[in-house]
Image 1 (cartoon, rainbow, N blue to C red):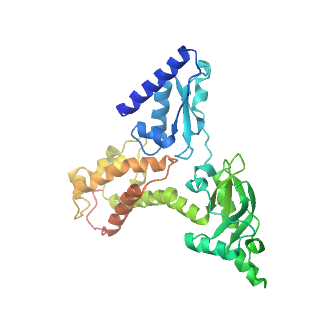
Image 2: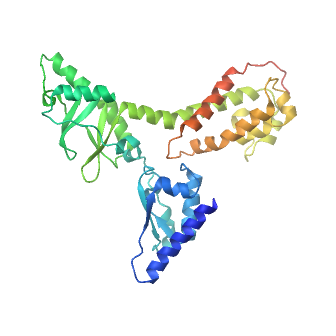
Image 3: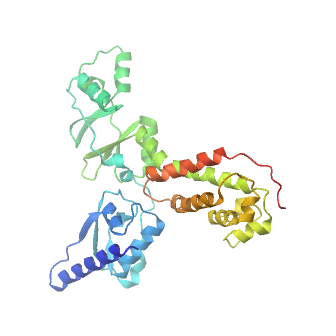
Length: 339
């Protein structure tokens, strides 16, 4: 853990205890999840990072809001003195395993809205200007009347109407609570093209559309697909080139492997970094560059396979995409196996 995070936690714990000793109620340390990660030198959460942060908090007798693991990165969390009974220490590690609608960035962007009696051209102009497919119709963010969309406008025209106001072609709004499971939003968007996200105070705080879910797919599911393709390329690359003994020597698992399907990512790195093993592949590729890139991707791969709650940035996706495109350029070779 970077020293900055340790020093900051020491100072926070000391302040809270000083205020308690002075007879005052300790003032919680409040900051966003992103700011908290920044103190530790991280940008994203993953199982290892979460364990590190939790461990350092526990070591100083501190606790943090329960939404740290899966909440939106811009959410504010509170760090306080831990008052839990030591016999119930395990309760501190309980987290919410369900992805929630409120984890989506789109769920926290106040939507552009129109009122029922607004002229229809105002709504269509806003939709064209911002490239939206629908707008909520309300008299206030707690009083939603409906939704106007290109589809609802088209349906009114197809029925022979000539709407001039938003009220004449709006449809029923589809609402979902911010703390609802994300899977419910996916189903609702599939059926209705959108959902309006409602906070606990009944304010509409965002709108989730098919475009938002497509972005979510790109940020969260696409890395799985890219890693899967890279691993398939690696298996094809070494298949039939090495003995079972050579594969097991390189692997770091306890179970014996009978083929490349059993190799771990680290096993591929160790197998291919040996000059003699590399020569058997017959590739016109620099071994050092190849192995270094493969090893550098290992951390990204581990985050992906352990379901980090935060989306990957453009840099990580570009690194994966570049490696995939590189593998696609490799020509199958017919060098003899070493069976």
